[in-house]
Length: 88
Image (cartoon, rainbow, N blue to C red; front, side):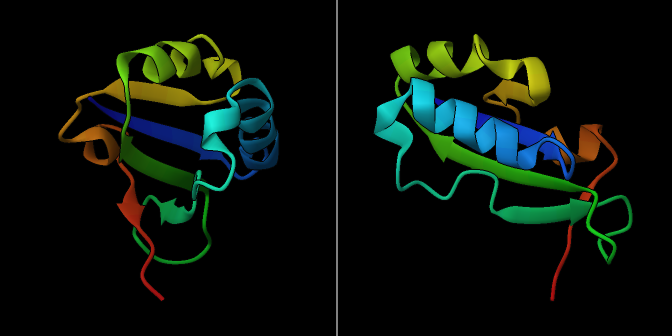
């Protein structure tokens, strides 16, 4: 299954830390490494990632989502949030 995760600039460090502290399997993954914004240019307002995972890890991530937004198997996750990837 594919999980999409989105966090604001203000929460990105806390979300990364919470995920890796509670789910050791995620240590070393590029969590929330894609910069996004409403118009696809600076300033960056959010950080995004999307990856394949097991049902177990997905469920554990979803239980931790108090500082982030997550969806499973969403094809238009960023579009639904009116956000675009920032290209440098």
